Every structure is written in structure tokens, then in C-alpha cells.
Length: 92
Length: 92
DNA sequence: ATTATATGCAACGTTATAATTGCATGTAAA
DNA sequence: TTTACATGCAATTATAACGTTGCATATAAT
Image 1 (cartoon, each protein chain N blue to C red):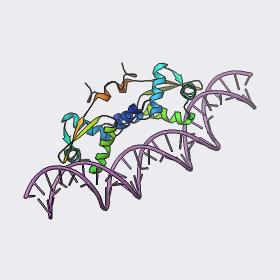
Image 2: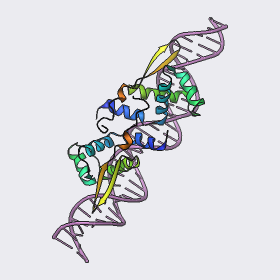
Image 3: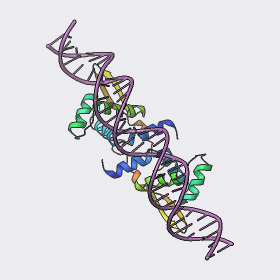
Image 4: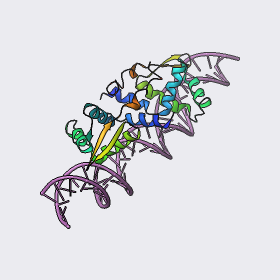
């Protein structure tokens, strides 16, 4: 019942955040800008850049996304490590 | 992005509901009454029976818990089927 | 039948979450 | 050094989630 686990499940509970993870799985190293346009264009999502940035904050808080500054861009990296044993208590 | 997936992740996003799943994993076939006393006594949770009933509704909605009436009791059964391939898109 | 027990249902208040808007900062190109 | 572009931060609003309270229903025991 640790705090990290809670952050992970909370992060996964939103469909937009899961979509972000899907995008990052398909094509790692997206910038926030690229991600935003992809979500809006490709997935016809109507959402602001700021809203996406908040979702990313939640994902980073859970350790599911890392981000590094590259020039004026912020590059996003998916980290699935926290997911690996997440359901092991319930699924064999 | 289907509705079921959303219900499952939403169900898992609450720590009390995860605790309920833990209890049902440890000892299947609990009645709502037993579950309530266990959560309150054993885990020192301060929560009403009605609140637990709502959590169970969420878990049932996600297909994670089944319940059957037995006399005046409601017996709860854990079903981990919906969890089995839940993270497969992200974890190998 | 009456009483006790286990559960169901609905209205309400409080808090948390998602998203927007507006402005500020930092970096790159002209 | 302007100007454009990508991102960061803060205040606000709207909605959803969690929990409580009060009452109703159903089954079992006396």
C-alpha cells in the first residue's frame, strides 16, 4: 500500500494518460510538442497543451515517463519498469 | 480505449478497492459483512459499510468481483480474469 | 408475528481531478 | 537583438469521486 503504487494506479486511471503511454510505446522519444499534435490530430482529441503537460506530470510522478530538455524541446521517454510486477499479487 | 478497460483501471485506482481485492485474494468467498469488519478491524480503516458497498459496485462494474446472494448474506468472489492481459501493451 | 440482522437505495456535502485561460520564461532562428 | 517557437506556472472553473446519513427492504431467528 505504498505511495508509489498509488501514484502508478492513479496515473493509469485516466484514458488520456493511457493514450500517451500508447503513443510513447509506439514511438519513443517524442517531444511534448509532437505528442500534443499527435494526440489532437491522430486521435482527434480536443485538449490543450497545458492539460497534456499536467498529465505528463502525473505520469512522471509515477515514474512511468522521464523527460529531458533538448534545446527548446522537452523529450519524453516511456519507462515501463514500474508496471512489471504491478499486478502480481492478483495474477499469477 | 474501450469502456471496460476504463472501468478496470478506474476500479484499481483506489487504495481501498485494492485492499478489498487483497482480502478477497487471501480468502475468497467473503460476505460483505465479513469484509467490512475485516477492513475496519484488521486494517484499522475508518469507513462505513455503505462506502464499502459502493467500492464493491465499482469492482463489480469492472468485472473484478462477482457476488451472489446466500440467504441474507451477499457472498463476494474475486475474478482476476480482467487483469490478465491488462498491461500487455506496455509490458512484455 | 415480532425482532434482529444483513443488505440496498438515495440525497447530500466535501474533496479531488481534469481542463481552461492568461501570462511568464527559455531557447533558437532571422 | 528582435522575433518566433516550445515550454512552464498560476488562478479559476466544472465535473467526478468518495464518504456520510437516513431510511427501506429482505431474510433469519425467536
